Length: 474
Image (cartoon, rainbow, N blue to C red; front, side):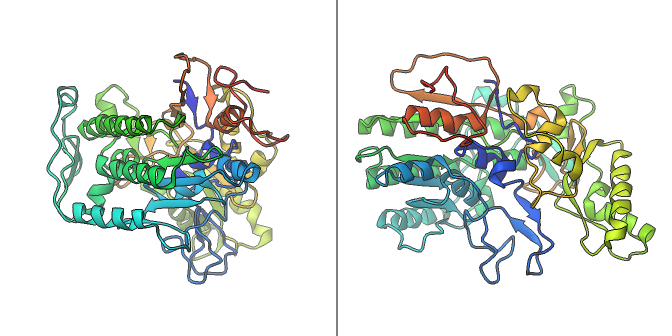
């Protein structure tokens, strides 16, 4: 119950990169969902974490899916290196989830691309997947009625007006025929993901071969529901109960196969609920970020100070990494950096700012993640080749969603514990139930599973540690 995605950039791609590598994002190289590479040989300088920008015409929005940016091995990679007969399979609601958990040596990798379950493999799709996608398309062509609201969720059915045309808190997750956005922000996406995973387990005989297999499943609907409606309302209550049922059905199906299997459940990040609901629940400081905090906006205001017409700063969203425009002359860069850092630090919604120089001087953090200082949390996502010239930390309960819109009313990504805290659950047949209070890190998962598998790890193979309460650690 005291698990952590210990780092600051609590986003999908960095979080998934920790789960089965045993490393923090500073080591995996996955410092954010997107980062800016001003030297990229293309007009779009934003790099998506799971793209291969070497492919001609690739952009951060229209890309070829690839694990190219992941700098370390996953557990599946290690298992296959130790015994090529192991199978490494991933199914997820997002391409980056499937890529970061399976790594470079996936036997099968499938992810929802907005229209169907797709793959980055050049091999022909198995008949099972082709048939599954056809059946799913037929299901999506029909409307889905609203979910029944059980008593547990009825008390949460309270509407909050976010904008004059947008309210959340009372949506029963119905879906019109063909509405793909409503599909992904509902339990339907998780149900489809688990159904495909179960089908692949059966068709490939996972768990029945001469070596241990790994099946990584990314259940993404909770994230989409959280972004769309927040985490404390009717919508999330319906999602959690449905996900519980879907997981139960999936595990019952595994039980019926008679195979010996183990399970780890965790998350890639937490979330901050919508400020409107938090304020009503006794968090008066909950608020939305000032849109003027975006790097482009601050950079535009600063431009005349340095005799420029174009913004002097670049960034992706509000908070996190910020880059100086590379066209700034070397002689002016230190002055621009000092002015930008001072401007951010003076803003009432900013907690602190760390420069790349300060982060480079900070040792990579180790030990209990609940004891990490703020600069240690940011250092855990600092990569000198991909991170910004400075890193902005918003104050607690300041939501980076400055301008809410349908599908985007709440978010995560900050170093605060509501975004860092995640469950970490281990289970295998015959395991004694226990509820451990010590703080653990998602980087601890891979070395713990390696101990279960008697898979040797060489020195420096993990930023995490094997958990002796779970496995026989060597």
